[in-house]
Length: 512
Ligand SMILES: Cc1cc2nc3c(=O)[nH]c(=O)nc-3n(C[C@H](O)[C@H](O)[C@H](O)COP(=O)(O)O)c2cc1C
Ligand SMILES: [Mn+2]
Image (cartoon, rainbow, N blue to C red; front, side, top):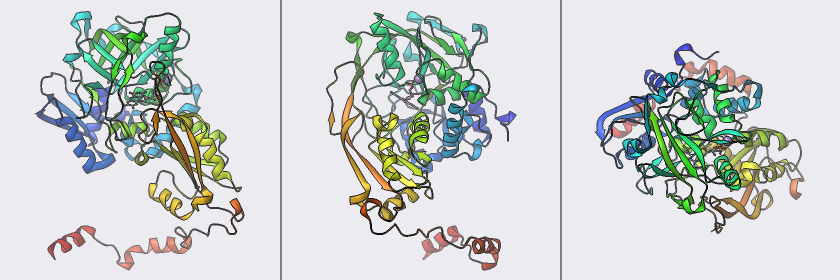
């Protein structure tokens, strides 16, 4: 199956057109207030429709001329559309992860971006330089009641390193004034590494551009850890997902290339100086807690360019089905590839949204005793796992790591805790981890760590003698019906007259 012509998109508005046609988009035409109304509407949609909440275009936001769109990518189907997957209407998280793993593997298909003229770049329809530019003209709001101020959330921050080329990352931006903001530039992230390299070269600031809207594939590649820092990789992977090069155009006041099809571009200078660090946060984080305030580098805005009638793309956070939580359950692709290489018998890996990305579930085809523990050590000792996880659950290949019910059944029926649980002493994790016992003192700007111990749960079926057992885990019979008979029963199903109309049953219950 190839990607349908009618599903082609190359910017936010063509993406929204497809969503509207396919019933994924709702418009709110009434004026909504600029405080908490948008958040509460989105919250209620997630409560009612969970991961199937629609994209919502708020056409009129009090005090602003620019409409706001939320939850564009907060569904695995819409992420699949952003990735141009032909089966996007039925795609699951597992399909999206597989597609991204394959895209990362096929480096020969990554495409160099193409530079276009300013006249062919819709993001340059309106250009406001210096004092003419104001962040206050954009509907950048305080999205959650507990936030420390207004934030840009769906902004792709583009920076450049003289040796390593462009990097694009989705990092949130805290608004401080009409031309003042700061960005989360942790030293573990590529932007933080670029910033520190510039500081060491003696540079006082680096050029930055924040792109809002535009080709949705760039949000996917900018939100996922790429195999290498910088090197235009996020642009190239977005090109690979698109199947054609991403179009870029020169900045007006900054020496970075920006996506031509974006709705809005904010250009500025990111300070490398310690005295320019400012409070960032708190913010309602993806895991459902309000995060700490940290010191982050500030940006002096030098220009804003946008379309004539821009749409402001944003998201909400903290709800278990919110867009940030859904998007954040994908970015482990690079780690997935690392685990695939080093875990014996590796079958699959998921970061379940329910566990808010502090636990991974790995399935293995276990052929030798002890492989469950090997997987635990590998997961907690490398890459994303050692940096972020609190725990890992290892299951056999008859358990789908994307199905938490199956995972929990394995945990409750295949674990003798004394033998099958590994506790590792505390090591550093990221500062936002709510379980962490201590936050380490910040010695350098952008560096914030916490201490937390780790748990590994070996929920694989155990062999006789494994860890001194005198018997193996008994045979699991849930999926044991005789396959031949089951097939026949399915064919004859209508004849049994066993289908129940659940709606009718409920109505009867109500009546009685
Ligand atoms: C909506 C959204 C918001 C995000 N906000 C942040 C953030 O504020 N700070 C951060 O370090 N990472 C944030 N991330 C995760 C980064 O985008 C992700 O780690 C990405 O790999 C960073 O790019 P880099 O690898 O080039 O540094 C966010 C991701 C999404 C999808
Ligand atoms: Mn990067």
